[in-house]
Amino acid sequence: MSNSSSFNEFLLLVFTDMRELQLLHFSLFLGIYLAALLGNGLIITAIACHHHLHTPMYFFLLNLSLLDLGSLSTTVPKSMASSLWDTRAISYSGCTAQVFLLFFLCSAEYSLLTVMAYDRFVAICRPLHYGTIMGSRACAKMAAAAWGTGFLYAVLHTGNTFSIPLCQGNIVDQFFCEVPQILKLSCSDAYLRECGLIVATLSVVFGCFICIVVSYVQIFTAVLRIPSEQGRHKAFSMCLPHLAVVSLFVSTVMFAYLKPPSISSPALDLVVAVLYSVVPPTLNPLIYSMRNKELKDAVRKLIQLVLVQQQ
Image (cartoon, rainbow, N blue to C red; front, side):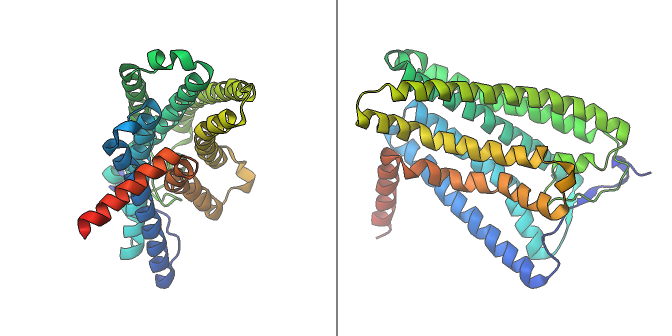
């Protein structure tokens, strides 16, 4: 029986053993990563450079883009390097860093999405008090609370996960260090200890989900009471991108962690992991820019400014 102290690396799951398909995987992930860098980078730069976007909604969107870039950068570059150099190994410290950063960034993102739902609720249901409730200091505290919550959960889960003896070797059936896959390597009695922490986390996650649902029930109730069609359209344009991002994030994560064991397989787990760890950070910039004229105009001006400077 080996434990975590008897090895200094983990072996990750590879997408394929064929060299041609490995290079295809590298090229595909490189394209996705560059697209996510471009999309999120444009949003961050546009919000930072245009003063009329210095509002609570765009402040939280800037934080969301930073979290998306961070979470994508935690898994995708390592996976690309593994395919390019045909290696499965990741160091023990590298695996620990991946687990910590993923918990940190994903937990912070979920907390931030909850805060953004509250921001939309105040903007539509309490418009006369919006400036008072969502002042710059309050927004900074909410964002700091989201990042702090993510950090706290990351410390708890990472410390607890890697303090458990690993009795089943060091082969992780995923393309990154995913906690459920690492726990499969643990001793059965130690596994129960981590399950308690997971149950507590799911309770908090469910509480945040209820807050988001309640906020949107009140938002849509208020929007339907707006007499003008133009006013309703503007309100929906403010809320639908956030609702789409929440739905994409929550649905993929829930399916990944709550799917029945009977349908679980290495291939399915791999596809689901890509869906929740790669797809949302890549699509979020597109979702937010599709129905947001202010953001699209700011990005267009930014691109035009860059092109003029290059000429």
